Image (tube, rainbow over all chains, first blue to last red):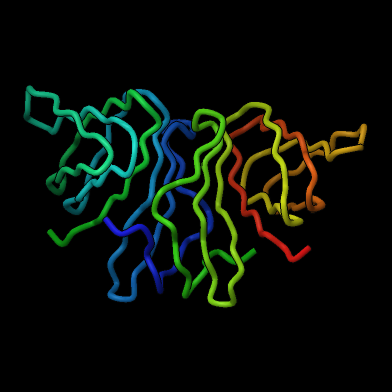
Length: 106
Length: 106
């Protein structure tokens, strides 16, 4: 994970979910791809995907249960996981969690 | 306030204050200036400035008391206020508040 993204466009209004407990900023790259840089307050949330996603944890601690899986897996800063497209996943942030979500081609 | 900032560099790790109740992302411009795009959870916070700051509220509701002032003033989305350099200010976010902070030359 790079420390910076250069030559990008940042959308000013934040994306706000779960009464602001989860927020993100959309970053557009010159190649047409998009990432969001997000923050989760401690809590449990369910997300849905459209495209497949790569979730990279910058800092924090996140338990994750993908759709159809019984197991919860825990991810810390520097770790990442993939989520299939058109899917749902549950997360439990036990700390404030800083992440980068990359939207992949399906 | 533009809806996007283009041709910028985004620092990936978030700035985290007050146990994550206030977070921001640093954006660097080609002209060497810097802004942060931030979010405050509802609550009351005190900030200090080094350089003078322009605080533009993208969304939310923020009461503000500058150092040496008795009065609280309220700012909503689309409104802004200036803070002197080397100063302190108190804020009360009554809603999740999305803001852009510009660091000005002193």
